[in-house]
Image 1 (spheres, rainbow, N blue to C red):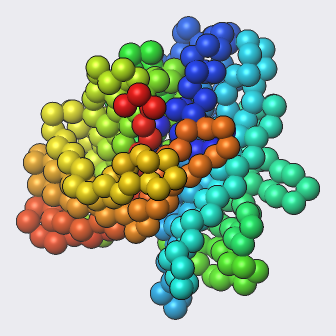
Image 2 (cartoon, rainbow, N blue to C red; image 1 turned 120 degrees about the horizontal axis):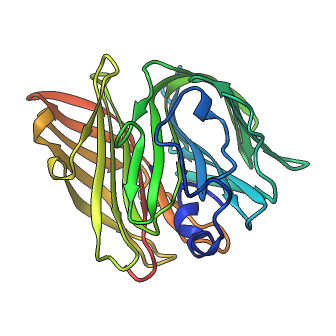
Length: 342
């Protein structure tokens, strides 16, 4: 939920954000999310990001996980910066591969009314997302991989919290998701173009950003239901809470209370590089939805190590369990980041 390289830009550049003067209008944020108007970039937020994750398939059964994230943040009281990360999980060869590329620039994204209009480029790399109202086009490339994908939302947007407003200790944050987007297009693997289909998840968040560690899941079930769970901690570890939303087959979003969600970390993976013990398997139980799920990382070593930033995992995961007593399965992304003192 809440991630210059991925959702983790929140933790990674935390000190800079907390010290950055507020931009004009930040003290009086809009108390609602209006779509598609709010798909566009906002120039008065402490932090903003657009976050795509996708589970892709080829016709011969190969699977790939893709993450493409764009960030915008204040460099100072007058100027914006932006950043992006593209990562691919590839378990189809003799050796698992987790590849990532990050770019940044000292300017923000254009605030194109009602549209997603995001682009960073160098002489050799292009990372971009464009679209409107849940119909998006993604392009990105890194060494060995490239995507050219069309995404089409299958459900209404899910507004998390109070009609899209989530309150944190540091202030209010705007947060909505498109939880099931059909994907079609091309994935290049070491120069070979592969036709792919699949399912994607889109997050857009902007506003005040808490200084936190967290575990976050985007879950897409075979029952055509979706679940978002975000469990966060304050920097000192003295405060924590859980934000969760369940989306029905018909697209109705039910926002869950923290005490309705039971999250247990079952197994860990110890990074040999950072000595951080990340989760690699979790259990989520929601009695009110008769939901009992186990989420298992397909590649526990999916740790990103951006230069000068905090490490974190972004794990393409499998889901199994029960829904109303019947077997269910699906896909998820599991994200985990820890502040150094936790």
